Length: 355
Image 1 (cartoon, rainbow, N blue to C red):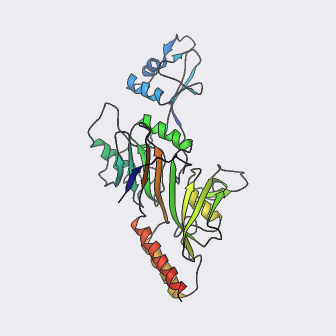
Image 2 (image 1 turned 90 degrees about the vertical axis):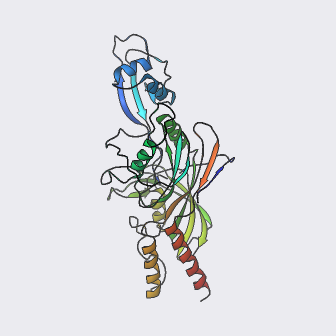
């Protein structure tokens, strides 16, 4: 069962998308003609974009999504000749049509502005190459289409962070572009508190620590991320961790992200020689620690079978509500497959201790 409660603690540092911090993407760009007279920007943009309402443009400006010469402006800003106007959103211009699909969702919380999903492992978050259907966004479009309308504003999924296909746990989604922009800024400013639980290969000398090192796409394989500790490539990334339980050959750790880079937890732990358990992409799907006994090898293979994915779960999410300002905190228990494997290792460690 998902636990939800108000949180009066100050929000601390942030993330995943296991996942990149939210950027802003340009959707429209105009340069004001030399002969243009002074005109409110909301009127100017409505005349430039077909089929858009003035109210929508005003909301876009109030959310900080209309920039003039690189600076956010209010709806009453008067355009001047030579002004460079950009309309930016917290999502890239849509490349594929989002088709509604009736896929069950585990909704942890929902109101008129946000929805929090406890995502199952194996579900892709957003349609893309090779995954145009069956995604979380397809399910959300269907869910929103079948909600009673609160106002005239379109309700559609606004992603502000993502988690990998095979990562389970909590994901925060905005319902409007205004809220999406507010939340995107909160992630960018590191005001969203997220904690992950991971099962990793190996033991630790210390009880807690920090992994720091730039993360960028591998220069040899664009599908994986590498750590560049000298800062020569990639973006800065910092992961704080705490050992929750030691099982001898594997450990259960809590991860708190100061930054939010793609595959940050997975890449950082591989970098220190402790890849996530059964993470095929980063080498964790091999027996990296333990004995040579066939009984042990079979035990690990059984664990891989129960948990056919990397052992990572987005456990907690804390943030300030983008509209009410209320402190909110959510927690989801470990997914069933990860829970089962953790229990098996716990029993193994106890048995081994008494041998």
